[in-house]
Image (spheres, rainbow, N blue to C red):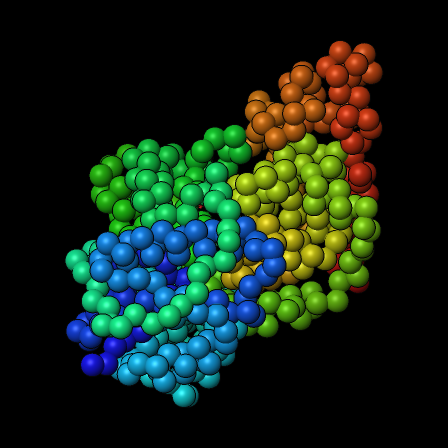
Length: 459
Ligand SMILES: Cc1cc2nc3c(=O)[nH]c(=O)nc-3n(C[C@H](O)[C@H](O)[C@H](O)COP(=O)(O)OP(=O)(O)OC[C@H]3O[C@@H](n4cnc5c(N)ncnc54)[C@H](O)[C@@H]3O)c2cc1C
């Protein structure tokens, strides 16, 4: 009897999984397969990989309950799939469509040789569906979002299947690589649902304000779960829709609608990557590709390690280094600081984020960096420079976030927390924080920043 392969990539879940459903609908035994592709593996595993491996481990437990097991193989996907098809008769391979240039090339090569069927699931609307009237892709968010919203969304989400028949003879596989569980992001679908429920029951209604406050859990923290598909975007969308229907208050409606927009930003950047894959190598705009960036190892290291002397920047970078996640407001502040205040190439920051982030996603990360640096599609204008002191006063007024991540500053009186270099000497001594000794003096004089940026961009 023939089997079908459910090739798992960024859809590590049983619930609302269109690729799995398509496999099940054939009525044939299903082989849930994960391929360890050497091209995508790094040693030691990044946080992102660890999160994925843990999630796969949990998926395997779920599969076990349904009478099946996860098959793990290592190698080039085409070769691995061909090998399996020599071992057992396979009717078809089902996988969720992915839009990175690597995934597109890989899948189209496989499709030439094998019956690979790609299924929509990573997004609500395929990038080919959200187009301008003339059939070309959008490069500006607002019109993209209008078209996205207007498209019909009459889908129903799929429950976890009741059982998942496996082939009579299990195929030999290998174990998943060693990985460490994150205390901050347990990699299970139950955790994803728990986060979604808690967010939908409260914070979503205050999201239009709460999403900017650094010390407050005002956002969903679902990004790693959406990144690896432990939660489907359709499930997230439907939960938010229920929240929207449950309220008549204008402020609460605004909160939910603002959150919808974030889900659309996610699809906007996936669409940009799909239509303009070159953004992974260069700025979207040609006239922003030859900016004379500076490079100073000392400054770059200070930025990476949260030692710039600007507390809000340092707190955000330390949050990233410790947890693998950073608040969206923080991502904009530190990206602006690197690319504008220090005038370092945005691609260095992009790369560092990909090394550290548990939710590191080529489309969203690239889009975020190009936007902040002012070189990308629908970007902030290049002369907009986030002032870290004003951002800090506005979005961490009491300095609670700063004190959480920078213990050296925890005894500093609140009035100096955003600009510790202004602390009088005697207060520095009393609060056990001598600037230049316990906490760095600012690594850049902000007075020169604007002129330097203008000159570089205008050149
Ligand atoms: C420089 C920079 C780099 C970024 N890198 C990434 C990245 O690698 N991976 C990533 O998922 N997001 C990235 N973002 C977008 C955003 O910061 C995170 O998605 C968000 O902070 C995740 O927290 P959350 O789940 O609580 O988001 P919420 O505010 O609850 O938003 C819900 C979901 O919408 C999506 N989303 C929200 N904002 C954006 C956005 N601006 N662009 C695309 N999708 C968005 C995410 O999937 C997120 O989980 C980046 C932003 C910037 C400015």
